[in-house]
Image (cartoon, rainbow, N blue to C red; front, top):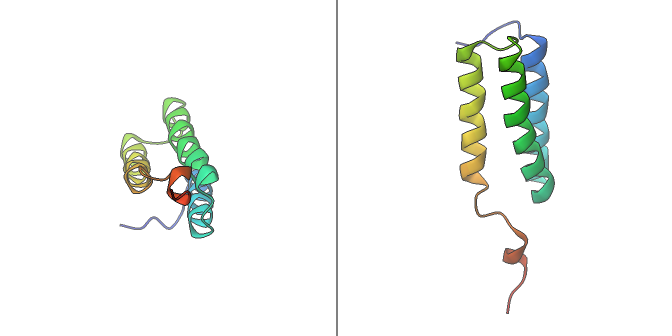
Length: 82
């Protein structure tokens, strides 16, 4: 179900997700990793502050886990060839 009205906390996290996507599209892997971590930390902070329900928090953690899996082999070594 798509929510018509998103809370300020959800909008903030959605903004972080948009930045992750943008960095990935432009191949800025370090920035994408940093924003991925920011997503996790900020979602945890907002949940602990009572600004995200357990269900919404779980949804953002699932997104975080998906990006973690997608980005697990992103590093600088792939650019260097022997």
